Image 1: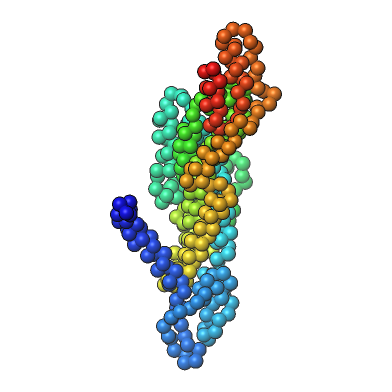
Image 2: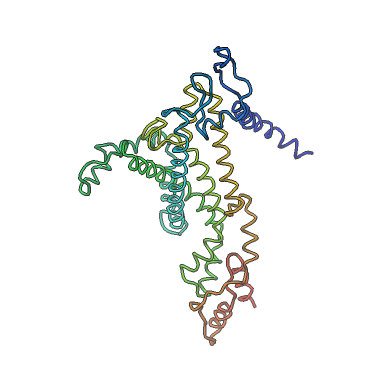
Length: 362
């Protein structure tokens, strides 16, 4: 009961700040717009509209001028829905993949002990700390027709690349800007996971004859997987809501080559169609929820942190490092200790160090 009194105020604030807007948007998505009554020819208020707005986006069904329902005319906002879905998913897959690879590499470098490590960590986070609008304008100048990018590529191209008008060049420019900004965020989350790995785990594996690649593949990756998957989950959900980068860098038009779903929501609201915009917002929410569910349920994004410990314990003692495993020759006391350490089962993750210490203490 005391715990309820402690968390009650926070839950009440969350219910008002988060719960009410969601419920309100869902309610509006089922309300019909003000429209012409086909029997009287007069404008009537909306009322319950059922799945009208969802069908408007999913199947391009529109209310025609005579009051009947038919296929939306070309140029209607709903005709840009499926292209925007494809572009949004494309951005999410490409940017998150590149950011994961770069972030992992940056985290592995920053996890090492060397002079100036603190300065490097601070410098790496600068792109992530810059506001997105500033980042977008910065890269817009870089990818201008006479910008730095075309100046650097001039010896390799016959003419300047039209980064803001050519469809694939524009998408590439947005991807580069997004990766530059958010790869440090991935590196920060992965670095936190790397710092949780005890150094004696790697040391025990090294004594046992594991190569650098084997230690990375069988120790680092399994132990950093929880943090890595959570970082991928957060970035994927964020990428599915991308809005400001393509709008500022390229265009705010709903039919631009970089238009995302969020752009359609904002554009629909600017046109005064709050009910259909609420329906599209609900569809975006369902898409994000589905992606999060798949990643947590099937891809191992463990937000609780309990699965990594369970996997480490269940996997203890099952791996051998193979031909690279060292066998110390008996002789001196130090050689005998190294020989006992070499006979330790080189199981994955966290059980190696404890087993090695027990053997060395005998």
